[in-house]
Length: 178
Image (cartoon, rainbow, N blue to C red; front, side, top):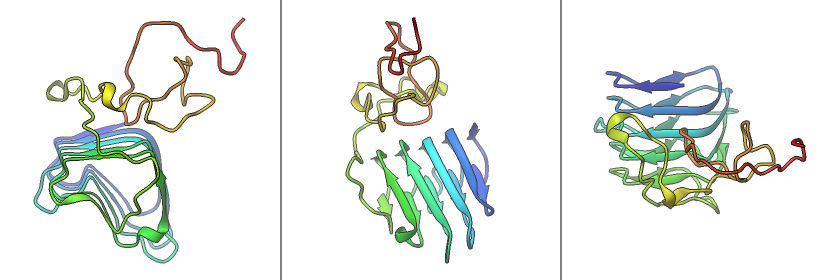
């Protein structure tokens, strides 16, 4: 999914959200705002870039009590406040995320994870809405036997929402191709 150029929040959920390959950019408020007393949220392969209001975060997590968020393979870049701003970082599980040039900082009340990065994603052509990444983050995403998609391509999944399309041979990771 994509949400861009809104005068408010890109995506706002207060009941829970399961999402893959979300692209949120150029919104006047938070890219993603998640708030729930007990909602469950799972986001993989998210790109949140250029959400530029003064107090605008790439992702704002306002859950309390039993709210939980799992976040993997996401890019938070060029946002007006934090990449991620949370009320309680103990309620999250995340890794393989990139934080680049967010005005106030990478994260607030959010754990630093073992495989996180601060590399420039070198988007292919963000001006023309192409947020596939350059070689700085190639293969940074968490490894997967199924590569989160079909066909399998050379054994990696890019971090972020937009996957590069490369020519070349496929790798038969699962032994499905004869």
